[in-house]
Image 1: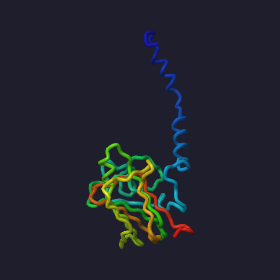
Image 2: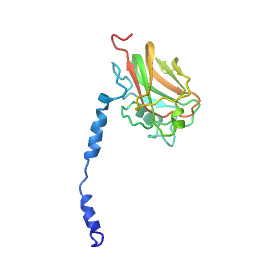
Image 3: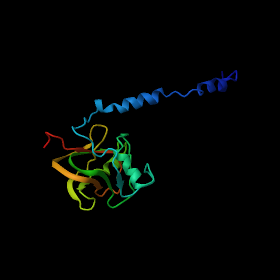
Length: 196
């Protein structure tokens, strides 16, 4: 075809039809991924999914232009293994979600970005989790002091099971000495009957 000069004409026919088979196949696979997940869902609802969120700032690496839009990407339910939000260099950087009503929280899951550079993942090693009934008065419910990073979709997210259910409307995650916050997803699960 190259020698006879009709390769270009031959290839144009292949571009005439869009084939979405592979795109649709992987969307179906990812949508049902929880059935085979390394991290099974706990009982109860993910209270954070689709709720309004905000963060301390945005950066050139943010996926959206405003803190609210970028922060909302962490509660979209769309896992990627990459960062779905990215604050600027803040002291301290923080992210928070408004559950829109007081709820009894029993578990918080934070999925770190999976990155080939361990130094980038390690930024998320040390952090605080705080809750608030009104977005003003905050109560520390968890502090992670470890230097080693946690993972995410690889089956090793940070899973914080609170010793007793905590009533709160707002949940905030603050970094400790990391400068940036950039996660894949955050889930906040409600207390269910039979769980103390």
